[in-house]
Amino acid sequence: MNHALILPILVPAVVGALLVIAARFDRVLARVFSLASMVAMVAIAVGLFVAAGDGSVRTYALGAWPAPFGIVLVLDRLSALMLLLAAVLGLGVLLYAINGWDLRGKHFHPLFQFQLMGINGAFLTGDFFNLFVFFEILLIASYGLMVHGGGGLRMKAGVQYVVTNLVGSSVFLIAVGLIYSVTGTLNMADLAVKVPQVPAADQALLQTGAVLLLLVFAVKAALVPLHFWLPGTYANAPGPVAALFAIMTKVGAYSIIRLYVLAFGADAGEAAWLAAPWLLPAALVTLVLGMSGVLAARSLAQMASFAVIGSMGMLLATVAVFTEQATSAALFYLIHSTLAAGALFLIADLVAERRGLLRDRLVLAPRFAQGGLIAALFFVAAIAMSGMPPLSGFIGKLLVLDGVRASAHANWFWALILSTSLIAIVGFSRGGSLLFWKPHAQPAAPASARAADTLGFVAVGGLLACLVVLTVFAGPVHAWLELTARQLYAPTGYIEAVLGTAGALR
Image 1 (tube, helix red, strand yellow):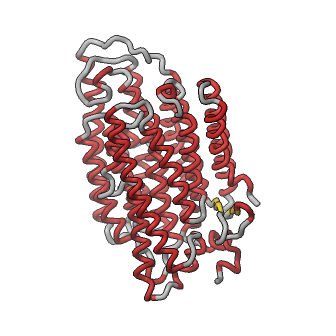
Image 2: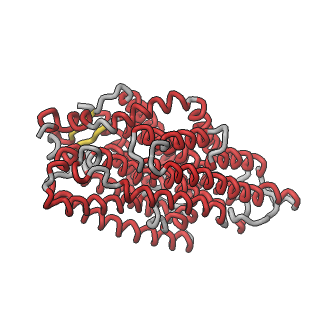
Image 3: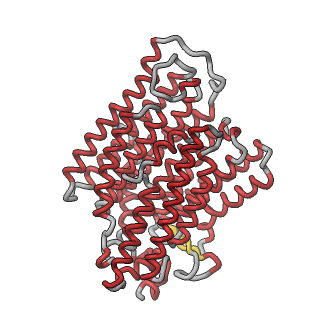
């Protein structure tokens, strides 16, 4: 049994509990525990990533109950990739937070650990009921993190976020009930076996449940018209929390890729590629709306929020082609956009902490402390997020454009991707000009109390350095992702690893 598979869930769960029990009032001890846990999670994720590189699918049956009756964790190339991405982003965010942000609320560190537990569990679980459970764990933790530090606007955005996700959770349960009523299973591998066997009389229930699940995942992924909660939530969240939330939308994208390739893919009979007609138009509209929002944003955090929406549109539009080439391109762009969005939210917080009451609003103000260094970081992050050369965003968009060439909608893809890229460039140029260039004509503001923000700059620099590494090693990374996509579109290995050969042939 592969006991290492439980560690990405067990480590944050245990450390989170210890933080509540033993380090509630000791900030130094809390930081030590939290940072040690995060370093351990990075090491574990690297180990699992290397192990998954051999192409095998590993499983862990909790309580030794066999699938599909028991709870099973599954590690393949895709889940290993997502675990590593979450761990790297989480470490960067934590380094930023322990520079002072964690002092603004009592329970930052345990909530941070429990959210990572939920995220890791969502990437590892092999059945949809436990996907729901891990969704609720990460959402409950995110509710607390969202209002960390208080404030009226933050509380208002937090209430909207809670209500939206509670409705989504209710729809999730209805969808799961419909699918279970006709298949008798919620295990992902078993579902891939049972879906083609569903009789025509039950297809309506099956496909209704599948579409409702797509709706739930679209809420998590901020897909139009269910994106409305994200700009206010992310823009008003604390900077490091918003940066961690950059991986939250990817949980929705991961769930869409996992379900609608594995269980509703080419072998699903009447329900084959069920998501494509719904996903593609919504994703293309999301791309246009998100990048238009970058141009119209009134604050740097709001700009980053709309950039997240636009990047999810591009990601899911590429996924909606449902080919190996398009999916590998989408996964490359997923890695890039997560790191770039996390860096942008942290940069927005660096700006807000130095501009007094104006915070990160895109209006003229006096120069602020370390403005030149922050401007350089923003310049790199903006280039990355808008997809300009030479960074990984440009490579990601080239891969996407190449990956969708065979699609019947290739002309729409090319036109919208190129035009929205131009809109994003103009939007980021406008924001950078207002924040960093035009203020040079005005006298400098008094030095900020947080002028020496060493860990903050280390965290942002680390995330941007990851983008540089992704650019330099784009070839090997994309080759690894091509193998990941090939594994996804040949699900026999996944099914046999979870169910065994006999179960896969039922």
